[in-house]
Image (cartoon, rainbow, N blue to C red):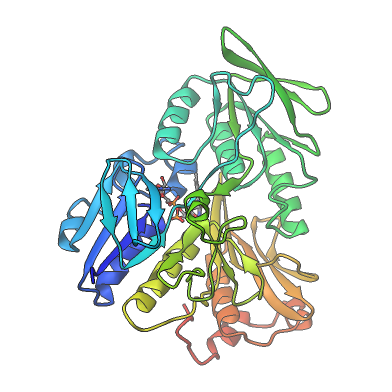
Length: 415
Ligand SMILES: Cc1cc2nc3c(=O)[nH]c(=O)nc-3n(C[C@H](O)[C@H](O)[C@H](O)COP(=O)(O)OP(=O)(O)OC[C@H]3O[C@@H](n4cnc5c(N)ncnc54)[C@H](O)[C@@H]3O)c2cc1C
């Protein structure tokens, strides 16, 4: 039988999987299909250093071209897989080729949710997912004076902070009551509201986008749901993503806001797997079906799946962690704070250096840190070791949390 692991998607998780398969000793073929024609690259800098002109495209690739030869990975850049026949175990691609697989891995990521409202097709309205999106946005940013950002999520606010640092007037419209409300604790959202407002960003909370108006085919105004008109020569829309699960669904693999897999990242078909932004899996810490959009999740899932595909079945149990850079604020999150019932703040919020420890029913579930990398690393140790900790201990400023975390017996998950 052909021993060929076919990976669909040449992003963070697909490339890591190809690499880790060789590290774990896979000697058969590996075939990687990537819709984008570029060398696989990192997305996080696109909304940070790249958009601020502090990094150029040469800093983005995840691996050099020679990686594919050195690791004997058959790489098809600019080629999209279009159909899958699970009975014949083949994939057909946009270049007309058909390839047989022994195992098939969806690493297809996600795409931006788009607006279809009046004026949304005007020039000057951007989305940010790919290096091509970022290159165009960066060019237009250079000549812009007034930017409107739709959506106060991570990407919207990272962009807003960069645009403001370049001296643009920046307005952010957010339909919800607080920024990054889906993932951050309420006190942390409040901190960001105040910090961005201090930097001169106009944050309109509770106001969505109703329509856009333009002149000569180019956007000039964003009109909010309150009827307020915001002049704009540049708009960035960051209203979330949709997992790329249609290809899986079309060949009968169950999907629901992502490709459904188990703790081994295996779908209901034992030869078909999914990982990264497109996969919905049972989360080891929360016990709920989860789909995460982060580099850590994509990378660690790839490393775990490589073990399973090389004969050492492994469950995915890694601790989730994430970061964002918004102007001078570096936010790091360890664990998942969603649904927390209590929180304790430690550190100096006025000095922009602090952490918020989030508890659910007496158990520490996540820690959000601002400009405090040491706190973040301590948090990762505490959460990985499931170290018992109370809100009272944390509320005591003299309690040495770092020393306490180091008293843990190191585990494979410790950092
Ligand atoms: C602007 C931006 C900033 C971000 N910042 C951060 C950050 O600060 N921290 C963080 O942790 N995460 C961040 N992320 C999220 C992170 O980049 C993603 O979670 C990560 O890239 C997911 O990896 P993936 O392999 O699942 O998907 P991707 O890296 O998106 O790769 C999927 C690839 O599959 C391709 N593909 C899809 N369908 C097919 C097909 N049928 N055939 C062939 N190829 C296909 C797509 O074109 C895409 O290139 C950011 C994302 C963006 C867009």
